[in-house]
Image (cartoon, rainbow, N blue to C red; front, side, top):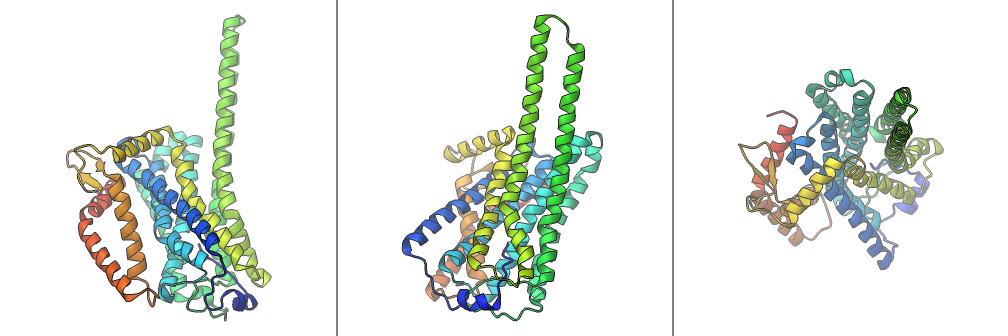
Length: 415
């Protein structure tokens, strides 16, 4: 999310008319690295979405949050990162001021939605581990849907609404050149948005995972106590008891390690950005733009890591990913030429992953770049050809898009 801040003094040094000072080699290296990040983000999150939609065994309340999280991160990689990449490396904005506001709003909304989903997953795990008897009541399908909707509505209210109304610029007189796209915010918006988008979800995650760890540790201690009571004086029983104690300690360490990785990754990727974001307005906004770019991309990397933290560590997800990848390499005869083939007799969708990857990437980027770019510096011939490709692609892939939406609605029980 591009909550960049700058002072009037740095404005004339950093935001003068577009002049890229980077060498060709540095550009190639940066483009290569960022393209890998984007590919991992899109592919990893798409695998999570397909796995949950395709396999009924993965359709649970917790995985409903994981599905919505993967959709948010997938959109970050698909429609936010590519244009941020061009802006960061070229140090220019080629897509006009109107699309700058749209891109910034999407950036803030999708990154905030991703963070809020992480707190909902922690909240769900808290009830599952600490209050298992009331879990089915607390996490009913209706409440899960309400929480997921909240995770999308709140980011919308702190992104598109204030940005399109210009509320974040009240009291700021800096004028940004038309060939740049940096987001200047006042103190009120910076503090409020940071609290809603990061610090409150962070507090919920800390509280939930700390209680989960305490309960897990207490359960291990109770199991050990029961084993000690049942233990006999014979050597065979003693060996069995020691083995079980080792297994219990191993489980405790594994739980602590998993929770530590989840919390640690979240803090490493987002804490630097939001710490600077909430402090900088009170320091007369003197932070250099390069620092903001580095911290922003560090936060973007979180969207590429979430599939690994919440999907690849799970055995069921790993098995599902292997099946999907195998299907992509060696498609079965029943798979049609579309990414999804919906069957009325089965509650699943048959996959053609390569076509889905190609269509979603092309259509998403053509839609965002060429429909909404207002006053861009692209050549008219290129723009015309892109619009033609977009029209053809929309016609060719109308059925898979319909089936994707239908499968997602089925997952949430809407149809």
